[in-house]
Length: 441
Image (tube, rainbow, N blue to C red; front, side):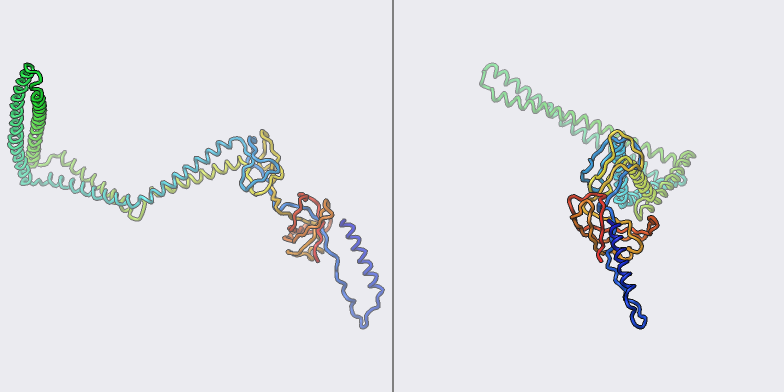
């Protein structure tokens, strides 16, 4: 078809040349008028879908699952096939995602609890200072004991022991013993009364029933009273004994401390006291250092560890996702599975094209035979008529959307690729059909 058009154009040029040769020259040697080039630019091209892409696995392996058929619609990022071990890789991705989530939550908790941690650190400083003060006082007392203070402690302990022995034992125990004896006397009287009523009831059945019941209740109550008072007396005696023992121990401790103060410090006690001061000073310094770290936020060391954990989790997740992506064939385009060259069980090589996805919602035409003479007559946005060889009676309209900046040499001619976008659709058009493009003048 293009050859016929070329011949027609050539003949038209020869006729115009002949007519020009026979014309009478214009006076004054003026140049002949330029004849406008009214011949339309015509090119041949191929019909292509709006967009298409070939898919391949990034890694080789055995195909174990195919999830889409040729001609099926797909969305972007759909999985259409998998290689073996993909399930294990999915589990690794899930585990890596969980670890990343845990790491992020740990960092958030560290930041959220920064104020509480700072307050706790200040409390630890106060406690460490109190411990140091106590240790220093003990060391000072060993080196220079306060004899008057020790005598006061002995006097107070002796007085406390005396009070415990007199007041607690005599008053409390005596009162309980008196109450218990009174309860026992009452029980004895009620027992006698109950026995007498039982004898009368036996001799006169029904005559003393109510009195006997009342006496029985009084007897039961008296028994309970005796038991309670016996238990209270036992507890009081035990408590009094413990109180006396505690008071005696306090006096003994005060006397031993006084004797030590009078006899001078023991070398072992001095060493231990000095060690306690040194340890308390170190503890206080550690507490102060930690409190200073937490003044402006979380502990820097813990913050670095938390951030490093997140970085490690992110790297592990990326590696797991990459491994999974290598084992899955995912679409990078929404459209239709135009070609699928896969079978379950077959081995595929990395990079081997196994599927083609195309977007048939629109069509383009690519021409690659426009010469340098014709391409200068074409511009982006220019309209054109397109006729397919397979559908000669159908004319489609298109618009130039791209003109290649790079040339290709074909059979000695310099040619450029031109792309047109069709405005029309037709149910019978197919990918790869030959098209004749006539560009608008």
